Image 1: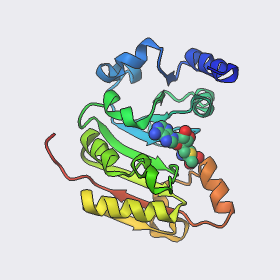
Image 2: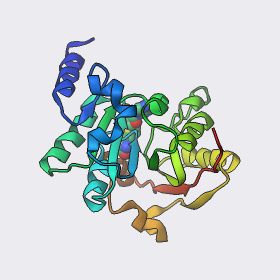
Image 3: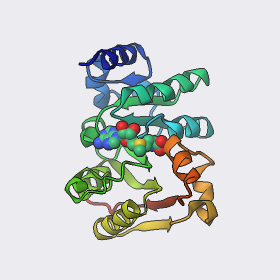
Image 4: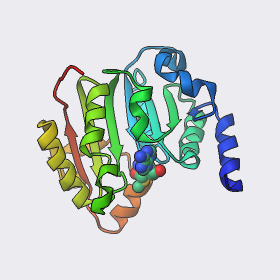
Length: 221
Ligand SMILES: C[S@@+](CC[C@H](N)C(=O)[O-])C[C@H]1O[C@@H](n2cnc3c(N)ncnc32)[C@H](O)[C@@H]1O
């Protein structure tokens, strides 16, 4: 492992709010969820969370819910973990993993809500399977979401948004609401005034923000 990466890895090992490979709790999380939060309150996931702005932003608003930010990059998660500690937030965890492994952490119907905020657009056709709204990911989200649990997507990328709408219409058929211009939409309240690092960058470049929320069909797995 390169030296810088090694240092970050060991810093994350010390961080009480980040679960990552190599920590004992990382392996035991799935069957021991309430031990982490000390309660069984509903769980919201922020996928590809980067610095975890939604996790840190929503946690104080909804103190009776638990929030988990997930990203594969440990150095980004550390920003969120640091902020959570400074704000004394107790309903937050971060998991450093790839989203492909989500169902190893979350049992069927154990998640109340999933946010995907400005995921990498993966425009190349060869990368289609890596888009976080690809059907294989939708199947996984469908499995771990509770009945009535929403998937929310925000993206500045019009092509990824169009692709996601198409995949959701084919696979789930229930997009509850959508807009290609969130800031000028009645759905604006849904974003709780939280803008992430990438959202700020892209909005400054003149891009509008696309947003949708969708419900998976109830299927017994
Ligand atoms: C464009 S950034 C967006 C970060 C943040 N949501 C924001 O809006 O500022 C995409 C993030 O997704 C993470 N990511 C991409 N693919 C992933 C995967 N398969 N599993 C976990 N994280 C992933 C990257 O590490 C990166 O932090």
